[in-house]
Length: 167
Image (cartoon, rainbow, N blue to C red; front, side, top):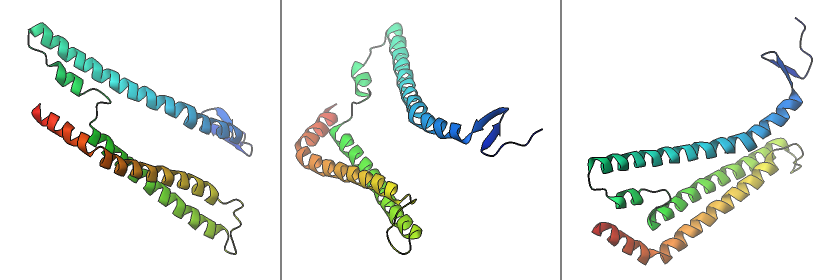
C-alpha cells in the first residue's frame, strides 16, 4: 500500500483533498442543515395535525360531541400576548448573552495575538467582535420590544386573561 500524499485524507477508499473539505463543510452547513431543520419542523407539525385529525375522526365515528374550540386553541401560532412577550424576553436574553460572550472573546483574542498593540492580522478577534456586536444589538432590540410591548399591551393582556378565565 502506498503512503498518502501530503494534503490528502483517506476516507473509505475515497480520497478527499483539503480543498474538497473547504467546499463541502460550508455547503453542508449553509444548505443541508437549514433544509434538514425545516424538514424536521414541518414533519413534526404534520404529525401533530394527523394525530388531531385521527382523534376528531374517532370522536365523530363514536358519536361523541366534538369540542372544536379545544382543537383551535392548540394550533401553531396561537400564543397569547403574554407568551409572545415572554418569548421576546427569552430571546433577548439569549442574544445579549451570546453577544457579550463573543465581545469578551474578541478582546481576549485581540490581546493574546498582539501583546504590543492592536495589530489584528490573523486574529479571529474582528470576526468575534462583528458577530458579537450584531448579536448584542439584536438582544437589546428584543429587550426594548419586550418592555415597550409590556407597557403598551397591559390592557390587552388583562382583557385576554379575563377572557381565558371565563372559558
